[in-house]
Each structure stands twice: as C-alpha cells, then as structure tokens.
Image 1: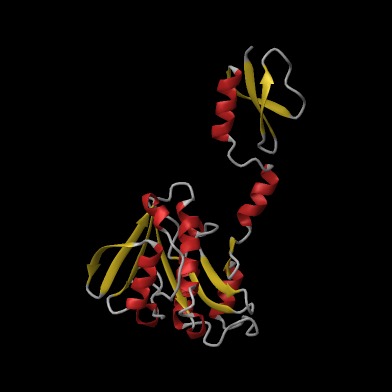
Image 2: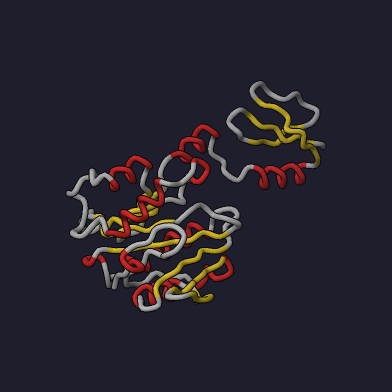
Length: 251
C-alpha cells in the first residue's frame, strides 16, 4: 500500500494511506512511498517532535545547563546590559564578581549584530548550587563560523580549585559540539597561564599552535569521548572577542 507523509500547522508529521483523504488540519508534504520509505523520511525531517509553538518558544528562551554542583545560566541582552551598567543585583554574586574579564566579555557581546544573537552561543554565568552565588562566567565570542566556535571563561577566587572551571567548560563544550553544524570548539590562553592550560587539557582540548604570547587549543567532535570535567579555573581567551585580566587567569 502506498502512503503519504502529511504535516499539520504545528509542524508535526504523520503517515497516511494514499487512498484515504487527508484529514482536516493536515496537508500532504509531497513525499509518498512505501510505509518504510515514509517513516524513514519522517525520521529525517521531524527531529524535534514538539509542536512548533513550543519549539518557537524555547528558541527564544535563554539556554540553561544544570549539574548537581553548578548551573550555567545564559544571560539575556538586558542582563548583559545590566552588568555593563553595574546595575545587576549584588546579593547573588560571590565577592569579586563581576571580573574585569566579565565586563570585557559583556562589552563584546553588546557589539554583536542582530544575526549574531543565536540562542545558546552567548554569555553564561556560573552559579554555584551550594550557595546560589555567581562565581564566574563562560561563553562564546560569536556564534559558530564555518563549524568553529571560540570559548572563554573566568572564575572569582572563591570558585577556583574546586572543579568548577573544568566542569563548566566540559558542559558547555559538550553542548556546543552536539549542535548542528558545529565541529570544533577552540580556545586561546596566555603562555604563562598554566592554570588555564591545565583546565583545557583536562577537558580534552589539545594544543594546535601558538602566536606571540598565546597558545591555541581545540577540541573537535572526534574528541568528545575525551571530555572529562574535573577541577581548577580558566581564562578568557584573548584576540577576537573579549580580552580580560591579562588572559583571564584563575587557579
């Protein structure tokens, strides 16, 4: 028996017998064939089974990545602007936050063009679950470009040496490499920032080169099995994007 692939206004797909009229609210997509062919086509084109209304809603909400020890909370445009104005609440911040690198990163984020504001590829605060305090931040310089995205991070003194930096880097890198079209996450750090280098290497990044005072690191989709969240702190990469704290040090 021949079948059709039909879809409704919410972007949901279904298999329908070719000889039976398409029900109200559904339309033929133009694909037809055997039951197996149609099911295979549906599996390819309908990867998110939520109604379009829910998909559109989630696409505009900030991304959140949660673990037992910390939460990575993506900032909205207004929250980034509040950081730059020093107009954000102080009661949820650990002493020393925002870092100088935080403000540099926020400034870079504020200069993004409209098409560079892509959900998930922004600036995140690292929130320690034990006390609910913001102990640092991590994020991307820009959305992916030709499959590559650059990450930077920094923690206040009280957040260092306890696994938060490598844990945050682990979670955000794993998330990024799971996104369509992203094949590589890169990072840069100062040559004398051994703490940052240790974090990057612990998570699975490998050194790819150097220039002047900077070391270049990368982790691709082929290396995701090597990702290991552990400990220590990190740096805000220098160069294109935010520059901070002489390479954004943390130990």
